[in-house]
Image 1 (cartoon, rainbow over the protein chains, first blue to last red):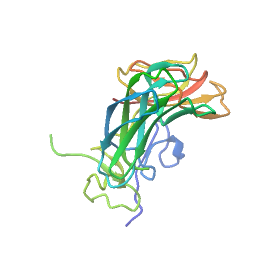
Image 2 (tube, rainbow over the protein chains, first blue to last red):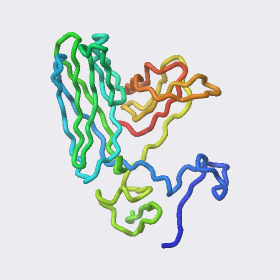
Image 3 (spheres, rainbow over the protein chains, first blue to last red):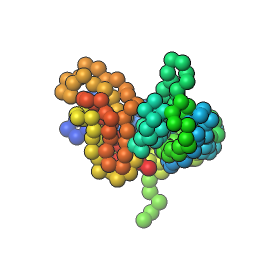
Length: 137
Length: 102
């Protein structure tokens, strides 16, 4: 196969001599390609019992994933309605207080997980939103 | 409108090969699949940044030691996104927010 490629430079930059950082696109550096996005809701009790939710992608390989979650923080005993990037972990030295917001990737699905202990021992519901890309992890 | 489009393969890949869930990863760009588009990249001060997306964006946040000439960037995951702003940012911070959102 011949050595073809495709590059697009920023305005004002000669694409033939541009450094990679000045290119908007270079076919040797693939763009992330979105397969699907959405959200899941998890309800758990702040006693160390986790809740999980699965999203199927069926790609046959582990895709790149970016995900964000609302957070119940047992250290502050506070619920944050904004969304933090996950995985997000925190544990004190004794392990008696911890929070864990994460996802596990496989060749067929993504499993989102929320688990906390040591706060107010009540039930919490968080929403996680995610982006699954065709690009391999 | 005719059935036009564009696809660009990775080096060494045949661009004429069919696009499917199994082969999409072999392309550098596909018009059938959105790629993240930068809404804002730059410095933010004061611990927050207001965006006008009206939805929850894909974003990254970094702690920096200067908003003009930083000597380091450190990824942080304590920042929060809402449909209108990023909050709990380091001050100063370097942020990248994408149009792509949920």
